[in-house]
Amino acid sequence: MTVNNGLIVSFGEMLIDFVPTVSGVSLAEAPGFLNAPGGAPANVAIAVARLGGKAAFVGKLGDDEFGHMLAGILKQNGVSGQGILFDQGARTALAFVTLRADGEREFMFYRNPSADMLLTPDELNLELIRSANVFHYGSISLIVEPCRSAHLRAMEVAKEAGALLSYDPNLRLPLWPSAEEARTQIMSIWDKAEVIKVSDIELEFLTGSDKIDDESALSLWHDNLKLLLVTLGEKGCSYYTKNFRGTVDGFHVKSVDTTGAGDSFVGALLCKIVADRSVLEEEAKLREVLRFANACGAITTTKKGAIPALPTEPEVLTLVKGK
Image: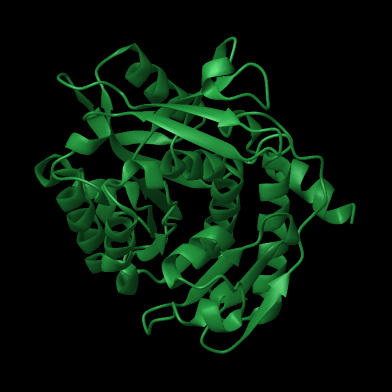
């Protein structure tokens, strides 16, 4: 078992979201774009670091201006870059993201292939992965080889070293060849994870049911799971463990951009779990942690872009105590 050094290692993609300077327009109508660094696993790493936790990121960036900018952002935010590689032959991934008038997002991706897709198992920093207490990942790294094999190897190494495996599928349908392939691959590693977080929309997608209820959520349960979470946007989240289940209300804030809210929620949750594993066993503790995580997610929706919006602990406590 690894010594508890509190390290949370995030694996996967980091990219740049180009967001229109004006909200509520299609990509074609946008007069200009702001570059907003993102990528769910990287957002989680920064969310952890911003809350005072220990975070590292494992992934590949293009050996280009954008790639070096992203590596710099991780460093500025206190995330260890020991697991970062640069690819000379491929560019850093880009995504154009438009915020519709209702604050929801539309995506257009430029990755053909991008550097993150070219990470190979041999390039992994296994020493870093073995030192993780929590190993967190998504599903975008499962879409193509060689990154898929690198992902599977990293999970296996982390698990053997005693890390808690945390999975947020973070569904991005436009990146997959088909919806069926997305569902198959997302589920292909499902029974390995011990903590899984899905959004209400992902729950519907994975179960094929239009019901967001306990029965639907529990159809995704497996024996290795310690905690299954379903985030419900402003309504908060539902939680399921072997021994108890329930719902924790969200916080009402003026939402301008939902980007990164789920990543902020996950970062907060993992920070608290790494500090005290009994959170997974004791319902009162878990509810308190989920209230904190909900507050993190809510604050993240009040500013544009994921990373600039990720909160610090004092900001979260102000919101939690104010209610």
